Amino acid sequence: MSEEEAVFQSQQMDQRIDINFKDEDEKLILIEINPQMVSKELQPQFQLLNKIIIRYLNYALQPCLEIEYRRNELKISSYKAVVKLDDKRVVMFTNSNNQLIDTQGIWISLNKKTLDLRIGYGEARVETQVSHYKMDSVQQYIQQITSVIIWQESIPQQILPFLMQCQKGQIRPIRIHSKDHYIAQLSEVILQKCQNILELHQGRQALHLSTEIDNLYQSVQKVELQQIEQLESPQYLQKGAKFNLGELIHHSVAIEGCKLNQILKKKQAANEKSGFDPYMTYLRLGLGHFNKDSAGHQFVLEIWPFKHYSTIHDHAGQYGLVKILQGVIDVNIYAILSNAKHLMDPIKTLTCNKHDMTWLAPRVNQVHQLRNFYPQTAITLQCYKYSQKTQNKMKQFNYVVNEQYKGFNPLSDFADLELHDIFNDLVQEYSNLHKQKNI
Ligand SMILES: [Fe+2]
Image 1: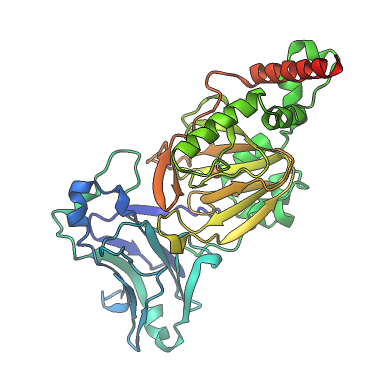
Image 2: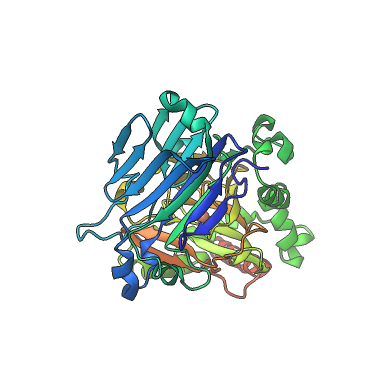
């Protein structure tokens, strides 16, 4: 089973959650709180939430370890000691009105064999770890653990299921996920030198990536701009004349009045009108038709002019692969998508060069921001795929801008236009401009 996926068991917290911890050495538990998914009318009830309890039990149902995720405090109790943490990243935090408004979440990993207890925020990975304890002094109790129960007692039980209901396709207000091991450190960049997935990252990464990413990789590993040129070029060009699609795109987006430049200007104006940075724009060209296996188009060509960048966004819980076809793209990766400023420092920054690929999974690398800080217009191919096991297919991506949590539909900026139509237009545009120059 793949390392980054390993089938998370996901549950909504509208009842007590029981997790078996008998035959495995390790158990990872993630708790997500998304208060902005609760309707205004139900907020007063939701705001009663002040504690979620995670209790580790032995076969006789006696507590061996207890962790309380509370407002302003995380409390760890064992037979030997009580430890309280007040790091804002791993406590339930509130705004100045004492309300749980911001998206937040913690993860807890306990290994009964190595006696490691790790606690962090957002995605469960090395970069988000906040505390690490060696539980040597309570070894005998830790080794006796056979189950975990999770519950809350601040919201009345009869209200909770009602509160947890929300429209299909939306993120639930409280979610608990568990799986059998901690996520190992994986490289976020798939290097272009590899011929197939078995060679990735000197053969190590391939063992850990899921079949969904493998499928996407097989679909796009050979795709280059030259190949798209051959497939999509206007018929009259295929006989001899050659145009470089990357150059045509760069030309059209960079020169005032050209086709892509006009579309970009429109998007920039819309951003300015909404009070957002006009550079927080890029062009999306959906390839092929909508696909039920992905939110929107499964394959999208994205065009990144110099200095332009995306919002910080998630990917509707999908698997994804981003391949750099031209230029250089910097990628910031985040632990969580939250309107809380203190959670939104990047946990990693990558520079992806031409031919590189970076990947994302439902709970690894899911939140990112792409930026082009280089003069050449960058072109990327994004590919998305839901897990076959995904039942809650959210069609919306979410993003955070100016500390506001928002949703957007990942639509194409070229509605009803196929790539070969656009290619044709760009060739005409380029030829006309050169004719004018030569007069
Ligand atoms: Fe993205």
